[in-house]
Image (cartoon, rainbow, N blue to C red; front, side):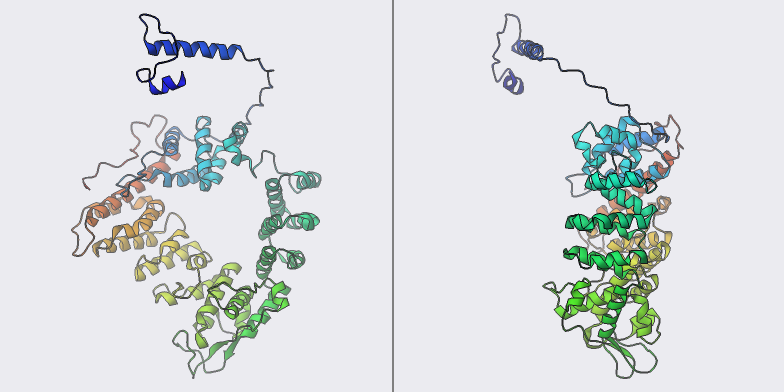
Length: 556
């Protein structure tokens, strides 16, 4: 009967008796109904189970009606252009959902119950959405997740059970001894946040009995609230049988500038870097030590001894690195940055960075200092290593050939406003080629100078006849990160311009589409924010702006 139903009674004769005057399809449906009744009649009724406890209350206000409709559309993923190499002018709703969730959470709203299943499905499909989606969904989503195996992820680490606080030591000890791994991580994080010493003592009590991978994750929770009181425990972890645990302990100790570990690493690093005497510092060609001025001479370690290995120095170098350079980088990276001033005759970080380095060791030394600035969150050194954004790329903190520095990570050490100003200056001087990852670490929405620099660079690239798809990543970032208030100012860029000689065929239409999509997305983001403030009222369906911009006159 199933085969006949799937193929159709015209192609497969159903195994039923067809009475005169009845169609084969009707006879098949009658037979299916009888079969269903027979199957149900043969079942033995099960004992009635207890009803589940009611879902917990969520006192937060539900999102306004217009925003509720917007969330339903975003979760339905309408307006995408999946499978097309050309996105057209429609905004990409999947990229706007994270911003909408963050904005709704900032308002203190909760999701309506009817949308909880769709919200959980979206969070299941995209791990990047989970924290914000579960925060908006609240305790009722956790209650609902217990009844659907596809939503088990929501119960991991959030608990299904509340995490006891440090003021209840008996409950803490019981959860630590009996809880699942995710519950123990959540517990240690919570206790560490409120009582750092109690969290460390909790971990120390079972340290030797934990698995290596568990020890590594537990050790990582000590980053929050790390203090000199943790030094003794971390010193003990330097002798751990797991190499990754030893490396993590060494990294944490290196952020304690007055620790014994930091002192040992500083002594080793300083023994490798020597200030050659000379007159007062003066500009010199990077990478070479002039004969008449001061400079730095680098003598990397000749061996990785037992003490270095115990302090987390990896003896085996990667295939693309020399051993001595590898050991030098690890020593300099772990040495406290503030001690280099004394080593270099009292010079400030910017003066130390400007010193020429002999024998081609400049890149290796500066890259290690960059990693140290990131690890130690040293703003002064990060600023010195980045240099002026308008300088040549290799002197503006950008990795050049053979360099391993991560400029984007180095920028995160700076305050957000200074970070945006530096990236804006870099783009104005060098364009967008090396700026994509830098843009990704800037605060959203972008500050006005940064947004203007990005748009100007895109406009210049269009006028120069550049391949438009080379900038699709930056254009996507601009759609999500530009201030929505800039939409009206960008309207003039949506027109189709003449293609310069040598330009990619059809690039004018593509650029016009891209700028139309940018403007449309900015206006949609502005509308979304207005809806969350209930500016559209309860009956705003007719007045709410459309998700899609007006049809574009641009043709393929």
